[in-house]
Image (tube, rainbow, N blue to C red; front, side):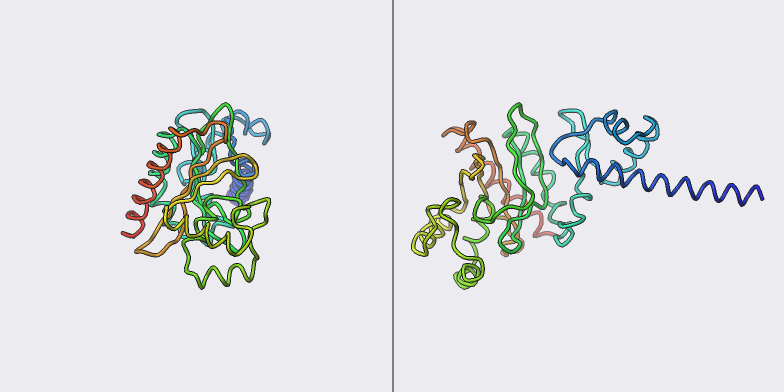
Amino acid sequence: MKSISLIHFTYKFMIQVIHRAFDILEYVANDPERPKLLGEIARDMGLNAGTCANIVKTLLTRGYLEKLEMQKGYLPGKKMQSLGSNSVYKQDLIEASDDEMLKLSRKLQENVLIAVLKGNSRIIVHQHIFKQLVQATTQEEKNVFDSSTGRLLVALQSDEFQSKYILKHGLPAANVWPEASTQKKFNASVKKIREDGYALIECTDQVLGIAAPIYKNGLLIAALSVYVPSFRFDDNKKVKMLNATIKTASIISENISKK
């Protein structure tokens, strides 16, 4: 009887721990750009500090949480980001880009992301947040023409792809991308992005982004972007961001082409 009771207790305890782990993951994911302190997680989840620390340590080890080095707190890890809406994207893209993105974020002291196309949206696959007093933010899913990555990913596709894309989703709205709101303007804007090899825009939310392409064996698969508040951007910052973003995108392209 004692052995049966012990098994029952162990089973209930394991189920409880699993529930708590998912609670913590959901808690962190609800506000993915703000680092959560261990004490904050324990308090808001109603957990004992030691129990919370053990669960967080396990999630950290498995890659579902990420501990920031330059400031205290936890953010969603790359495995967590590969779940849900991002599960359709290959994990090897995240693995090939993670270290280089972190280096780029620290070098420029700005936020960095990788995004892909999904219908009329650009979807963030992975990102690194650099904490600033004034923080640039962006949505996980955003209108494709209201982001540097979205514009780049459409512009670097074939003419046939673009024709079908515009037929299905329409031209950019004048208040989103005024330089491309007619077919003639759109063609001219696409030509410029192709010639430059990158896209630079100020979004409608006053966030400025620079995007460079990521290729796998010559095939365009994603775009790397650095995004900053518009007021923090000047000519010197532009040169530094452009050079660093293009170089990092090239390195990531090499990394993923080897997989």
